[in-house]
Length: 409
Length: 215
Image 1 (tube, rainbow over the protein chains, first blue to last red):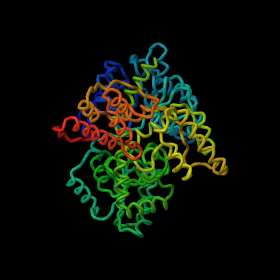
Image 2 (tube, chains in turn orange, blue):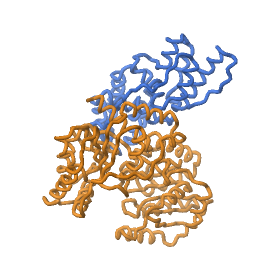
Image 3 (cartoon, each protein chain N blue to C red):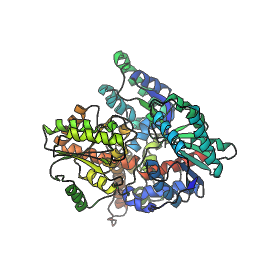
Image 4 (cartoon, rainbow over the protein chains, first blue to last red):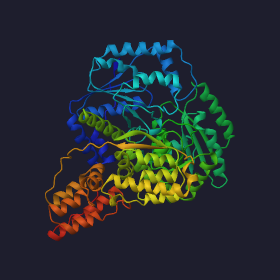
């Protein structure tokens, strides 16, 4: 186990202009009875991925509020991470036939890790399946144990879920990102939406000059409408479907399409999808297929802010936080009603949902024809994110959970 | 904070069953609490039940009836639940074919878990009251202005109750209680409370010129 050294410390008061001073004071009031309370967060990676990104922001804020919080990362060999990756895919519903040795590897690394550190905090939050077996250390050590599941468990492979459930059922509670991702469990289940950080580079306000520079860099016309989908080149994100929707829209509107995602150079399947996308684009100069560098938050931010409409036409989705990123920027969003997206896009209130290529094209045409409705959806979307999907709300939910657990005890 | 229940519904018949058997906290969550979590919406979104029936079960007429329920008319969850069930039951009786139709997405019954703490703000006169209202978080404003109706078992809110009983300002209390929480956002409702309080203050202190502003 390795305690994580935190690099990014943003004072809580910096969020006051975004969420209001009253909200900050409410968090301080919630945290007051928890002063000195020990909290331990455990996950399996310190960098990369949404969980590490979230903990990097959340832990310093909780510390500033007076909680005695630490973040530990479990360690494991290649064999462990191969097994847990297979588990991860199986929990998302992919076919998988685990061998007994796979479960042994999982158990061995969990035991090795939990024996090394004192799991003695008052609240122990175990993130995702990899360290779920830490609950075995509970017999000697008291505390409230909560399992935070960031993945979609709606259709898990039974062989892996049955194994995992034997651990999960021993926790005091479980947290899921959406009600549809949860399982029928005997322990209390809580809803904590994933969250974006409004002050992070990917979401903070940008100078208009910078946005124009980014458009210029990619030869995008700032005058004509811009439709954008930001996502990796993955068939489940349906980039080719987005191109088909764009072609329907083009019959009525002179617009452009941006499909931007991380580089596919080290991902054979991604490279193949990228090739298919380029073929589907057929050298249309108004379709920009952009392979962004692995870490390009400011470019993503600029492309989202320059967009007229943001699309997320996924066939399957986790929570799909790119939707919240776009809503935060007051962009009208047309998105598929899959995964966690309907939590973010409330149809006709904070965006428009679609169930097909034709449906997505129709909703885009509708919004291009009714800019005043598009603007209203964008405003509502921003307010919806502010209320539900910001890192500060996430912190407030943890504080509430800790207080409610202490009071119940 | 939201707790996910073990009930869910994919059809109107299952939805009715869920309404009949879910906890009181669940009825509260999907009606009262939703006014807090979607406080910025003023059009067509009055509770989660109506929204699901409209967007996922695709039954506009039923959605309209559910949306028309005004939580201000209820001082108990049992009465609210009875009316919700009656409306859905009558609709299914009239249209049994819709009762079995699959919705686009399932409805998941959830519950609210409330933790109440003193915010550290007190008021003993109108000026202090004005200052405190301007300073409250959304959830604190919601707690006193909306969910208090259940707690008080009266058709009023904490602010009006205090103004009428502690300061004897019955007219101001009634004016504040008449603010429509369905056609206002929490911010615009708060702005109206502040304007009404400011107007009352001017009556008592004509020299006062302070502008009211929402928090």
